[in-house]
Amino acid sequence: MPNPNDQRQPSAALVHKLREANQNLVIASLKAQDLQDQAEMAVERQTEFLSMLAHELRNPLAPIAMAADLLKSISAAHPQLPNIHQIIARQVSSMKRLLEDLLDASRVSSGKITLRKSPLLLTDLVRVAVEISQPLLNKNRQQLTLDLPERPVVVDGDAVRLSQVFSNLLINASKYSLPGSPIGLSACHQADGSLAIRVTDRGVGIEPDIQPFIFDLFTQAPRTLERSEGGLGIGLAMVRSLVEMHGGTVHVRSEGLGCGSEFTVLLPVSADQSVAPEAIVAVSADSARPCRILVVEDNADANETLNFCLRLDGHTVDSAFDGPAGLAMAVNGHYDLVVCDIGLPGMDGYEVLRQMRLLRLSSMPCCIAMTGYDQRDFRAHALEVGFDHYLVKPVSMGVLQSIISKAFPQQP
Image (cartoon, rainbow, N blue to C red; front, side):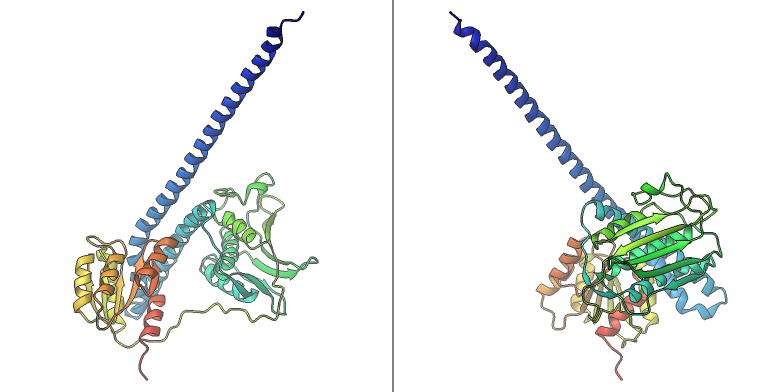
């Protein structure tokens, strides 16, 4: 007669193995969760670091950019001033572009880029992209040829981001082409109804083994040219991410080194080509009436340079270098306009404005936040506490003048 204990032994061993497997599975799951948490924390720390880095770099860029604007306004004082202004303006623009590329790469990796879509004319997008890339094309004496459809083409997209796509491709073509060489941008409809936009050059080309990775973050073609225009290997990664966010694709074709390159962006066109597209508005150059302005900025150079620029426009300007002093002056000064930094000693810009609102001034000034912080939550908080405008450093004087002229137009 069989022994019942002999039958239970295999079952007990199997249960033991199942328990062990279950324990190992739980441990593996916990380790995987721990690794995921660590990765998310690392991405968050990276994002915070890049945000702080951008803020710290934007602060010294702001007075340099404003000083360049100041040089432009007094360029008649010396024959070399226009050249000096153009050099400084080009380098500030280059540094600002590198900063934005670095931050955009972080935003893409953390999924923090959102699109503001509207019907857009292809010609408007190309015009803005050409304006952005034109200084580099001029510097390299490169001729840009455009070949666009005769009939207007409307796409649904974010005007800023699509212009960034095409300007990045044009800048990339310029950087990797010899001075004086031609560059082309063309567009045509495809059989499937999509729109193909191509940027071609006769530059250094791309080796076949690099082409599959050319849109990966921090990937760069070999630097075979003597050139001062560097890069972080971010521009093409941004192009792919932004194009895919618009439901399109981007491809590269090159026969190899020395054979030039062709980048093709495929985008869906708008279903309704009769929609009146939203215009990409240029900055207004209208003049403003003389105003009383308070500048609250702890960076002495930025404060002084902004003072100079505003006084040249005929405004009366006072300065404060910390939050409490700025609040006291704003309450007692009867100002038309307050330009206030966010990161101030003693009291931050949010609290300065919050206290101004609580005091219910008889005449509340127009308030502009001018800061190195560019995160959405900073911007949203600034508008929540009552700032009328939020500008990220370095700020073009043209943008600031446009805001002032719209709020305080010159009386006829």
